Image 1 (tube, rainbow, N blue to C red):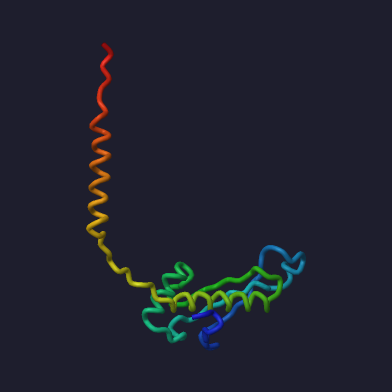
Image 2: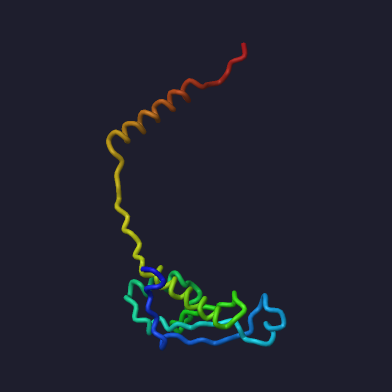
Length: 136
């Protein structure tokens, strides 16, 4: 699933704007350009497996109330930061939709086992020839 395909309901999101740090000159002191996006994970209507993977991906950004908290302050304008926060949320949800592949256990072939034993024997023979040097 691509981030563009993720449909996030507006009622699951809430935004607050805060004073950002970083570039912006005097503007950064006057205008609240940083965005704190809160997404209610229960309102997203995700499959339980996807929900668990999203919680694992988000890590400490998930609050005790089940909200995913994303802070965007990379850009100088509110709108750019809003788009950045929503894009990051969509990327996380898209990544959570990708199920991990099951590992298929494999066994070494008879030839591989024989080759390993043969190499061990050769190495053992090399070490057997080593010994204490006698100075007569």
